[in-house]
Every structure is written in structure tokens, then in C-alpha cells.
Amino acid sequence: MDIINIITLVIALVTCFFGYRLNKTLIAIFGLIIGFELGITYLPNFLSDQTIIYIISTVLAIVVGIISYNLYLVGVFLLCAFAVCILCGNLGLDENIKTIIGVIAGIIAGILGVKFTRPLIIISTSLAGATTIIENVFSLLNIQNNIFELLLFLIIAILGITYQFKQKEIN
Image (cartoon, rainbow, N blue to C red; front, side, top):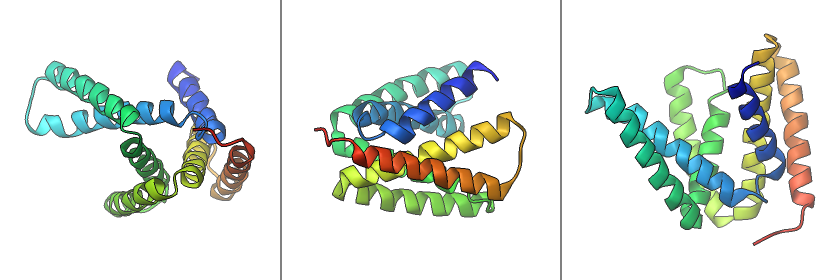
């Protein structure tokens, strides 16, 4: 188990059980991730120097993170959309189909997240956290059992959702 796996598991646990309470922080983190991913995914189409791509991607990550943190509803949209995209990435379908479903479901989740912020942030962060926990643990233990994965995913997601809904609402 390396440091990346440990950090991923900690972030996934925090997201699953404290997603709403820490939403501004998570929104900023996901903004950073989204900004960086956009940069490293699309800049190679225009630039060939890896160093420049990483520098611009880092700047883009910081800008999107700051925008997400300061423009709360933009951040809510991005958080819900990204969380649902992660969830859709585990559907076991063809990559193109997963991408199309993930983008459409992500946009719908983002719009609904803006409209129904608290419940959808709780649900989306719990689902995304649970799926990341299961994905990492099963990968680390080199276990592949779809029914057991699904069962554990549902248990962890329900625990996360229940715990978050029992917390007092914060502003």
C-alpha cells in the first residue's frame, strides 16, 4: 500500500461521511482536480512540452479551485457532477458509453445539486466516497467479487448517507 492509496482512502472516507459538512473544502479540492484534469487531458492537443502542460494545468487547477470555493453554486454543480461521473465510471460498460452516461448524469446531478443542495451533496458525496473506498480496497487486496463489492458499496454508502443526514445543517 503506497501513500497515494492511503491518501485516496482517507479522502474517500472523509467524503463519504463528512461530505456536506466539509463541502466548501471538498468543492475547492474537486475544483483543483477538475482544473488539473482538464489541463492534462486537453492541452496535449495544442502543446507538446510536458513541463508547460503541467505548469498550465497547475495554474488552471488553482483557478478552478478558487472559483469553485468562492462561487459556491458553481462549486456545488462541479462537486455533484464530478461525484456522479466517478460513480458512472464504475458501471462496467464500454468506455465511450460510460463517458456519455457519466457526462449526462453528471450534468443532471450538477443541476439538481444547485436546486437541492444539501440532500444531493450528501447523497453524491456518500456514493462517490463509498465507490472510491470499495474500488481502492478491492484493488489493494486484489479481490474481484462483483456481488460482494456491490453489497459493501451499498452498506458503506447507506452508512455515509445516514450519518450525514443525522448531522445538523450548517451554513
